[in-house]
Image 1: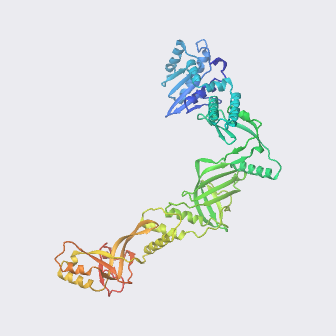
Image 2: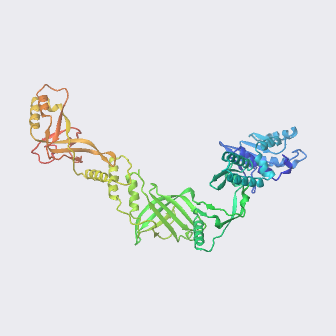
Image 3: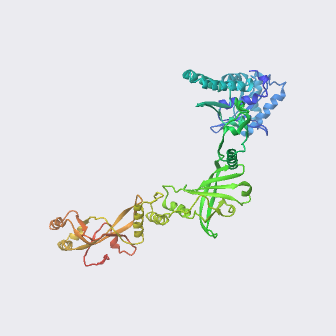
Amino acid sequence: MKWDEVPHLFEDMVSVLLSTLHPNARRIDGSGGDGGRDVQILEDGELHIFECKSFTGRIAPKSPNRRSQVEKSLKTAMAHQPDSWTLIVPIDPTPDEEKWFNGLKEKFGIECPMYWLGRDWLDRQMGNHPAIKRYFVDGVNDEVVRLLREISKEQAALDGDLIGGLERLQNLATRINELDPYYRIDISITGDQTSVSHTPRWKGAEEESPISFGIKFKFPDTELGRLESEKFRNSIERGEAVTVDSQYVTITHASGAIGISDILGKSAKIAIGSTRAPIEQELHGRIVIYGPTGQRKSSLPVRFTQRQLGSRVSSIHGQDKTGSIHISAELVESEFNHGSKYNVKVIFEPVDGLYPHDLLIVYRFASHLCNPNRIQLELGDASPIGDPVAIEGTDTFPDLPITLLEKLARIQAVANEPFSVSSTFTHDDAKQIEIATHLLDGEEINVRESREFIRPIPLEWIEEPEGKANLLSQLENQIQFLLPMSQQFEICGQKLFLGDGIYFCPNVKVDNLEELRSFLHGDKPAEPFMVHLSPTAGTPVTFRLLRDDDPPEFKDLGLVRLYPLSVASEPRADS
């Protein structure tokens, strides 16, 4: 490599080489001073600085200006506290130059390692990466154009020799990829179309060698041409994606990647992507709904996470914290600065898996998202943007289950057990919520299913013969019973505990009376006898939650209490 013939290319070639060897290498723009850094690598928390000098010949004492340049760059770079500093120059040091270079550490009190990479190293690396020399020195654009044209010819010949043609295409693609150090060229064939795409080989390649185009659009003065022109103009104004057919497009300029100049003067189908992109720092705001007479109806915090910038119109896009309310605000830049005109579109799509309280908030808000209400946007801590505007994209919503959600949120608060729910409710869900609400209101509910209560008879009831006789006499007649116990209820697929309660039946019978007689006529039992009680035909069983004014006896959970049938209603403790 004749380095003395390419001093104007040296820094470009070395920076591309370092980026090829180290994907995290970044070239420093020296237009405002590079701070003693032509290239730097920040990796694993360490900073490595490279200084490129295109000197040829010698860096000897008789060339003090060269040595002073190196020393100045070294001292400047040390302000960045690098973990290493490397001089890259197409000169292999003499013993005297090596002594001078090594002495710089002591001269300037430098602690980090210093390296000199000279001509031998550069020639070896250029041999390992020939695309760099070919690109900068040999000029390969014409060769790439020729290879691309060969690919088109090979594609046309595939029908005659499929296997051989594919092998030749692969070889051509490989040869092309040996020519551009900035971009990897990928070739794909679909039908009669050959597509060539350029992908940066390393981080920052697209910045050092950006691909740029000059494009001329010409739409004919026909109905179709005017429609295409209007679609294109609106998309550019709003930063939206748009595709323009090749009949309306001419390429007037192309640069940045080898072979790309071959499309100059040609027609091409152009696809322009959307400018929508994430907002680096989320923008928080609030949407407020006002009634037709100006009364404030509802508001909801939102966060904007994406923005879209057009030539005339910009927009921001976000949602509430549940992801159920999506908002897009379209702002005309010239008017937005004066807070005068903007359009707001809101989409309500409730998501499953929210807590009842959170779902209730968005349903309440959504109930106002209809005409003739109006909407206003507030951003950050700023004042409202303009006046309230008409709500777009919404009609009157059908009846929303707000009342059910209010009851469900109350149930969850009492149960003190967070659970998520679906955004819609079945008939059974609604019935379960109503039953639980009646209980929380202190009301009784009928236990609809026929059930049997199996409870132990406390031993202290029958320790004395008189107790056995009284119990048997009582159970052989019609009786009512009261049973305090904990009870779970299934609500929207969740088993919830709403509190301790009482089962009550005004007329029960003993299903295992004969076994009970035998038991009471026997010796003193070692353990309680399990009595089976069930309602008589047509007799309801009710359940309610314990009340604060219930006597302590009612709070002995699991202990059955029996009363004569003469007590007409639910007995008190002294019955």
